[in-house]
Image (tube, rainbow, N blue to C red; front, side, top):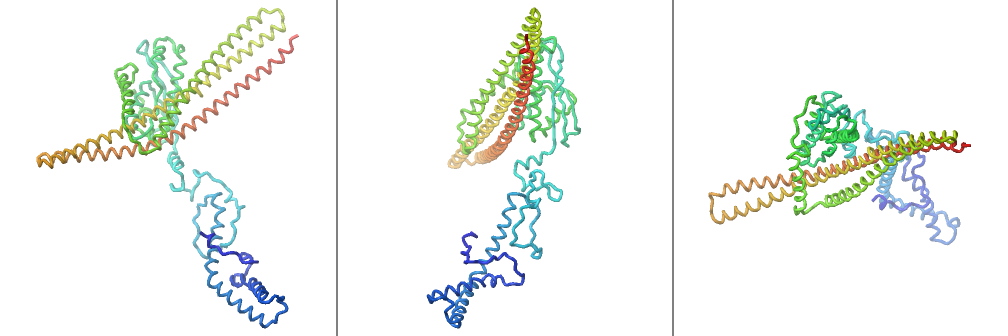
Length: 541
């Protein structure tokens, strides 16, 4: 709007921002030169002869007349326009500051502060150039207010405490089919809600499953995505129970230990779940927890849980839900497509791990065969080179085995974990559909009660009206509660999915960088071994 009201510039307009005495009249100094030009041009238009040949007296009278008209126009129109230019100058002087820094000091309103309103702000001040992270900005030694932070930064500012969990030292308890594995869960935290900063407790696998069952029952209805624990493996545990030594099933135990550690760290990474009393008891109570019901894969409760999942899927398909928020339809489709792609990637990664282990075993066999041949060769130099080649192949076998472990633990297990977490996300979407269905069922029941009430009123059966009125009120409360619950879980689910996507990106980036660094390091070792061996091979006489 300011640009539309700006007057066209005068010809040869003097610089208003130049050096002037403070006592000079701004308008007078600005109009002194235009007056001379207007008089000369006006006179030239009246007479084609040069202005120098005119009589001085008529020219002076004409000049005075024109000056008076110009002065009247300027007095009527120029003051407001001059103020507008001054305001724009102030706005222009503030524009360069906004994109480079966040000025936390309040602007001064003192008219006598001595600042030049027309001065151009200096761009070489160190304060203006400095870039400070928003999370570290302070005002008089205090944290920035909530209105100065984005929602993500505000959530991170509230979460200033750390907690880290490690699961290690798996040990077998008992013999035979009654045997089970116990894991040591170590916690290091700075959260004040915990009485101490370090804890160490013993937990069995069923305790982890029981914790998940409790958290899911309490928080899933509120739209919270509860991470899933590792899946039960009847075959794996059968090997553990029947083997006399732990080394016979060490691979299965290590995979489960790492999965349990990732599961617990996902639990405590959620600001709501880590403050749950059941989580605190799980981490701090140095006694055996009450045995969870239905955690066994072959128990009756486990079978019922399987049928319950099937029933939930049928409920989701049969629920004629009219979605009013397009975000949920798009997000569900996106999650399902991502799950399909991720599952294919996981299958390929598992194939890679198998092939890498096979390559390692073949390389080991090759190294042994080379050693046998080198021992029976009569040519001394050739025998020495083949012995060296056998040693190189043994080193390559070790590197290949390490890379296979990296493929599995760093990459393949990450994909498997997120396939499980996507299932947890879909469960919360299913919980939202359940709440919607309950809400609509309550509305249908309320409609029937109101119809029954109308029929009683038309039949003048007043003795049953109090009861039907009470029932209508009860169903009205259920409808209102259902609507509130549906809105609550919808809002919470949007936030949870946003946090889930953010965490997923961070996890994938960290694991991929770690995976690529290990892969590059292993490749460099392979090159180093072959470079050292090549001169010996070429030196065979």
